[in-house]
Every structure is written in C-alpha cells, then in structure tokens.
Length: 65
Image (cartoon, rainbow, N blue to C red; front, side):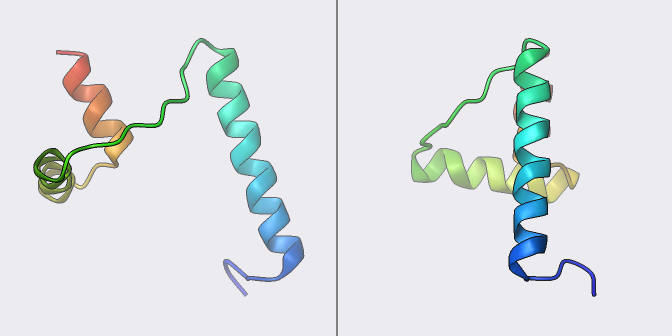
C-alpha cells in the first residue's frame, strides 16, 4: 500500500525528512521559513505552475541569477 498512513509509515517518512534536512544543513544549506504577502505568494505559485518546479527550486533558481 503506497504512502500508507499507518503510524509506522508516518514515522518512517518523518525520519526520512529529518535526515534530509540534517544532510542539507550539515552541507551548508539553510532551513528557512518565509511568510509571503498574498501578491508575492500568487507570483510564486504561478511560477511553480508554469515550470512544474517546487517552491524551493524556483527560489533557488531565481537567487542563482
């Protein structure tokens, strides 16, 4: 059963996400929480829809310009 919602499966997904976060931060990444104003959030959502990218990918690409 893919993406099962059992307690065990939820715990495994949480552990995987925590390990990924730890790996990125340990490699020099930065965990960041951002509150966007509605107009900016709409622009980000539109760019995500246009490109098929995640929010992280869109922001990373735009900052790398």
